[in-house]
Image 1: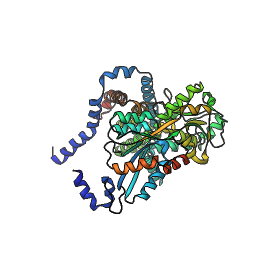
Image 2 (image 1 turned 30 degrees about the vertical axis):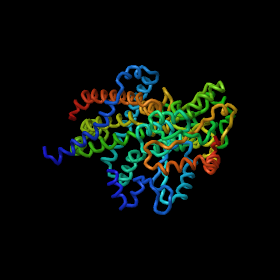
Image 3 (image 1 turned 90 degrees about the vertical axis):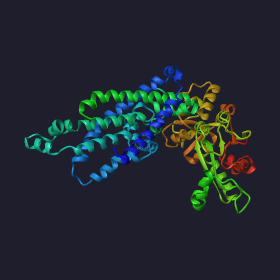
Image 4 (image 1 turned 30 degrees about the horizontal axis):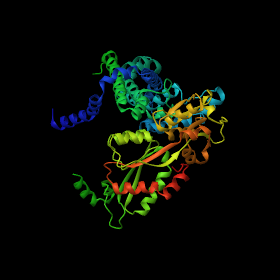
Length: 259
Length: 255
């Protein structure tokens, strides 16, 4: 392997892996058991997994069609649309949380109407957690899927069309199977981002054990009181997310042909 | 190594501040360089005013602040954050810093702060006192028990015999205040100084139990301060009559 590639690659691995090593070295392993059994930890972990999964499903539902529009439509507003999709990527998540308040909060543009008409208030609920996570994580899915769609050979779709398939049938039977690995990779990225989401969640959904306190929030608050507990919780979250991703990779990405 | 860095920085005035030169400046005998103050979130309004005064009295000095929950700051300082001064919203977090061996001298109490109920302008939920924090139908914010304002809240509710039903346990007092300012909660338990800082957007409601849970605010120069001279000057200003005036204007009490 050429040194100009190898050296930076090794540096890159060290840069990404050393903080993880630091975390593992500092982990008070004897505390792992008691921390796992501590009240609220299982609750926070469950809430994290459920809300990240729901956020990923929501993102798939809206994000795949959105990626298709970005990749296939020739409308003039496409560039603007793509810029809008990436807004949550550049927006500090805390600002994203405030922005969600301004739209979906009790005094928000849509939220005040929801409150008046249906008596629905979103902030400080598990729904708010899912919304905040979706807001922050969906762009990751959209960008991956759009990339996959652009890389896919559009001639297959053209052939399907000449054989009489409608656009919806073409999308379902030709396009989707073709970009499935891209969708899977995007969903994994989206899920991982949602699982680690902190800023938008603590702002828009608040922090309450059982309803809105996800693992990252629990870690942050534990850090205020007992850094060792925070490290144990971080390692736990890391372990669970890595295990889930590896499991999925074998079952899902592996089959779809992504190395 | 640091010497070399400063030698280079001397050529670049913009970077000079980063070196934390602690000697007397050429123009006077006051401290120069950069002073870094870690201060409790509830001091967000009072301290910049004091920093500005210290800068005016000492040309060549730049005072920078890091405001956050005292517990977060105490953790950062214990982990070696390059701070010169720490001002905590309670004694417990100063004790964390002291037990990490980072206090230089005895911490001194410079102000006190009492809990207060904050409600949005016009008090839409007609909150009158602590008892309203037990009302299920209200959206309520209280600080998390891990941070000083949350510890104070627990004490207040215990003293009043009110079982609170908050919707969110905020990570610091200013986060709780923000939710009141946005009108997203009907009431939050904050400090008197926060209500003063919010101006017209927030109304304060005093309650008798607050007097039992008045927090002491200690300040201390930190061990390993890069700019010890400026740190001492700042602490002296905070403890002076002038400092007290600025702090009481911001809604804090004299010790």
